[in-house]
Length: 325
Image (spheres, rainbow, N blue to C red):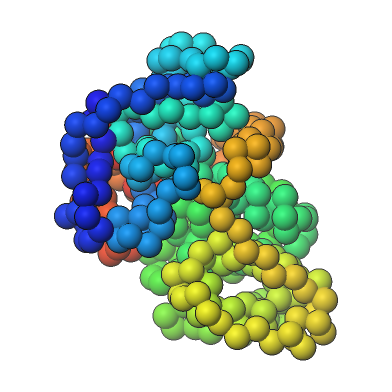
């Protein structure tokens, strides 16, 4: 088969479409013929040499895909050859075929085509696990998501609205904020022109946000804590703004607040399977009913993955960028 390889770390030009050995499913695994994969910022870090795949997983980038089951390993039940699926991966989505633990497979939701289904596994798993399983967002609470127009952000807006939360977003342009508003965001903050701490306080009569989903890390740590309501929960899922920040413990104590940080890629397969099962139970019905939808900015041929990485680096997109075969 062919896959996107990274012979040497570097810029987008480091991505090389090359012939590689065919994968073979082992115990508890299935083989998926990939139709589409989505591009995530973790892929950019891997390309740059900063985020290696977990031991034993595929060396190729790609944290999610959609396609058809073409082979089934020993000990797998509930799936058949020919099933249309999407999958959460530890790597390997930028390829013609990928081996997937059966617990990380999802059926393509009703009303979603096979290509767009590639935009779902990573964002739904990330949002559901952090915002609902860990941070326990409840109806009537205020939820702030940074990068509201990103793949994570567009899904987070829709899921938070679906459970009855008030949604605040940050984004860097009117076009992106307008799109977030169309998805249901109630509080729109242009981080280039406004202080999100002040805006959240103003919009909530000084109370602050009950849950914050943050992709920035160190750069936003102190301001996020300032923005939290009493008993608020900050979930950190990225480090685009650096890895070392200063945390005011006194503020955290006074607010009786919590800060959590998680990553999805390196979790054991059993934990991923638990998250995927929860996503199937809670999110898939919302997709099937049309209350939530994948947001796809554009599709790019998989062999030209470099072009897709440039789009993400420019941050000109809204939602997900997909690689298609």
